[in-house]
Length: 298
Image 1 (cartoon, helix red, strand yellow):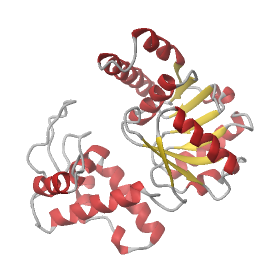
Image 2: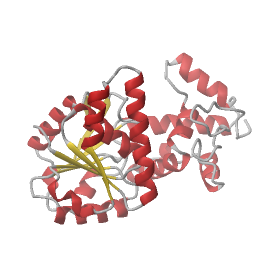
Image 3: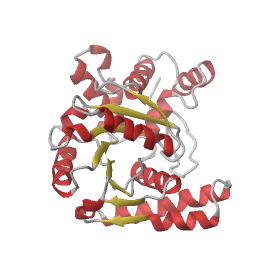
Image 4: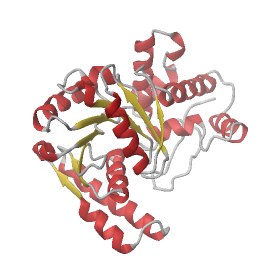
């Protein structure tokens, strides 16, 4: 199936990358929505950056890039979703905010519009339940940066139809993704496994097993991970990691998902990783920032 208009609520890093990806791989009109003018302005700068990088690397021609830019629009009016045939939500990982958004979109969008959520941990069935189209609702978990990473994790809710899954599988292949699917359990596949590793690395650091640098080096060289779990946590944002672990802990009731006290402590102090300049590591907060001395005593 070909979508003609994709509406993306949430113009942050993830939403902007998804928009650029879809516009560059299809002829669809893509609209990024946000209630904050500053976020929309930053999103436009992000798309410019993605385009320049693609051009410099020879992934796109100047002519095609010009077309891609024309396909993307920015708005602060949710009503602009009225012509969308696909919605991909990429707002903050807050269930009440998502519920409120989907209730509004359900009234605005045509009955055949498919709703996707980029949530990395929240239950899809719960999000779908606030709409009148639970059969056309699914999780579409992209990975950061969305225009580069090859994986797309699809999560059907309890009512998601086979047709909806087939349609989005075809769309995912069209935009160059390798697709995996997961049942609707907290954290799905990737977040559930990834956050356990992050949390265990934080416990290892807290217990003095080794330094942050050596724990990460053990995973990058020993397991061929592109980034160690503590550096990854800083990249994701420690507040986001903590929230996901709390969702997993509540959802499963299993103590193995209990967030590490050091992770809680860092979030309480406002040390959230790269975005604040300090987390498990210290950063100079430049785009090519390199980790400095560990911020947590080993």
